[in-house]
Image 1: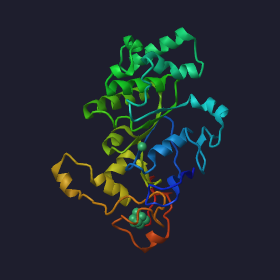
Image 2: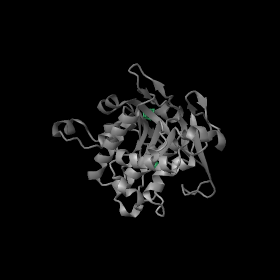
Image 3: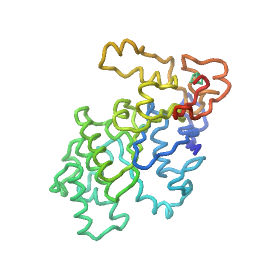
Image 4: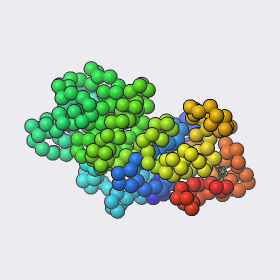
Length: 315
Ligand code: SF4
Ligand code: MG
């Protein structure tokens, strides 16, 4: 609810100014049990920061995080321990996120050890079970990360995330570092596991096609805020916010007739600095429809008749 995460900066890389980077600047959304909520937006829009704050890997600057009606916004480490088992994260880079000095069995079993679940033998059995669930042979237990391909390493990361039976998994660009040929296999794995274990995903990606494929609903972020949130098909078939329209117009469509019908919208300029976001609607400096009110008043993020949420004066 109205979540904010600001990072103080000393000497800014953003146009030499001092101040704070407003990475997430007032986001409200609800993730529903069993769904996949996609978060899309260009790099630097605050997607990863949002994901990390939601599962309390970081403490928000302002706003609230509610988990099962419990306010976890300012939980201390001891209190977080209890909810940590329910929430896991899978990172983008399968090369950097696995400790190269540990064997696969130790990596996947680490959360079980940390949370003191089972004895050594039970943990080993669980690790073998998980490796098979993610499509790897249990004989891999004693091998090291460098012996595996990117796709296999991401499977190992997923097995580790699954080890303590989480309910919510934040997937932060989990296939972006993989070859396109491997991406769909890993996406399919995510979907199979969701069905089997009743998982809920917050799926962060800049890849609109991947997000469309896996998400039930999609939130579009721009400069630390959500500009549109809707059911996937509604959003992709008929985007309401000018920024969503521009983003989607850049996806190639296989059908040439349809491709012609949809004009590519080229946005002017770059994404402004998150240290000094534009007044009014943050998108006004680039929006093809901007007018006076857009520069002066911030549009509220509100629900429309068709159930989608949009922040725009004209929609
Ligand atoms: Fe564009 Fe104005 Fe809507 Fe912002 S509020 S998206 S500037 S039309
Ligand atoms: Mg990111």
